Image (cartoon, rainbow, N blue to C red; front, side, top):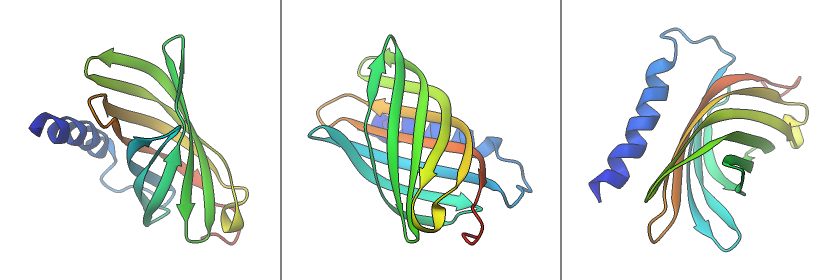
Amino acid sequence: MRKIIILPLFFIASVLAALPARAEDKNVLFVFTFHQVVGKYVGNFNVNGILSESGEAESGLMVVNGIAKADKIIRMRGGNIYMTVTGPFNVNPPYVTVNGQWTLTGGTGIYDGISGGGDAVIFGDLRSVITFSGAYQGRVKLPHGAD
């Protein structure tokens, strides 16, 4: 049971350590935790940097030829933010990792026109309840009026 907690925290801590000590106001760090339900993944997020909020999110996941693609809906107070994550899906049973890239693909409400992207580090546990945890570091440009 300790491996489940320690390994995701290790991956998240490694991304946090890569943040500059004096991050500019446009930097962002998303941290997600998802678990599988029928046909999708649901979970929670925390975001810090130019955005600062926590809440609910959902994600799809498709793996084709060893490349994972996850489309996420991040539910913020001012609207939804849409994100796509891609990267190699590395399997070491019962665990998986993805070291890839994330891109904001759009938004609703005050986030209509949001853009950004960066690096993603994801850890998955494929035992009885499939869970994924990830840290996403990068840059975000907010649309006028969202800041």
